[in-house]
Image 1 (cartoon, rainbow, N blue to C red):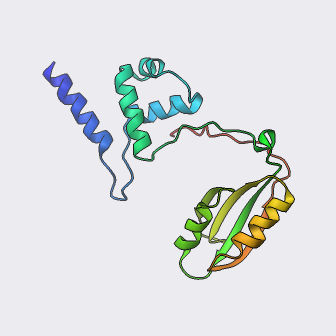
Image 2: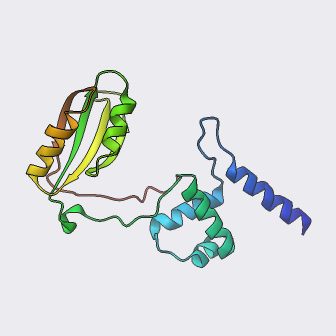
Image 3: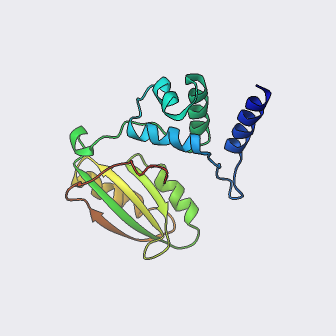
Length: 171
């Protein structure tokens, strides 16, 4: 019994450690929990527990920890067209100077769903979701291009969404 508690405590300590980059190190059980939730974000903790070999309470604690650490989010993913957003675009942004203030300003815009700093042709990529073409034009022309440090933008308007999934697992 004592050895089981020690092993369990050691697993929890390993699970809570962070790598040198500040990223949480996840053990196999946490990765399995994430995969279970990627298959069905509403899957009951008891069912997840059976699949990964933990109690419902232990799964609940692990999930809360993963949420608190920013490792994952549990959200409803929609098709923007079905909820009234007729225009999506990926916008490549080139910046003069520090990328962080521009990335932060883009992240604060309600229409911007995704911001990533990149290496290559663009400094930042931002995915935006708008109601229509006028809304898209307003966001790009009056708000994004007006940000201090933005040198140029290039827009890639989505014509049709063929695949949108978050099922890549934890490989």
